[in-house]
Length: 140
Image: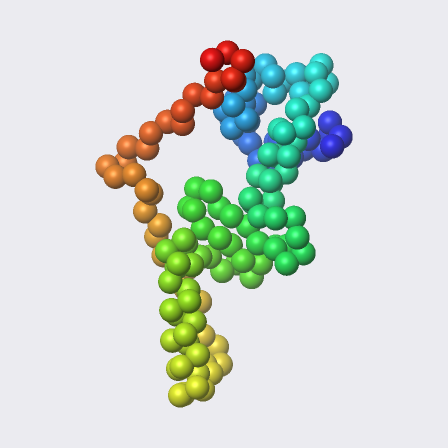
């Protein structure tokens, strides 16, 4: 990846060098060195940045246009439909119900589109624990 491409992707996905450093688990000076060309960009950092920029989905034509919203924890389709993990979990049941209703009553011409259901965070009481500090194995 070119340095200019890395810079563009980095600032498209992060608000600051500090936010990028926290995400990559490095110090801000390391990210700054990558950006100004003082040191080579870590190949794993490039791969992680590409994965983050495409929304954690495979780089495949079948997934083109799909995105993942980290803050809301939802999957967004190319048409803009949003699905929470709980909705995706119950999708098979809804699909079977839909098939039976279509067989019995026929199709609806213009179905109403609903937004994704609220997805509560996995921790109770609003206390989300901080990520564990990453320590390289050579310093353990």
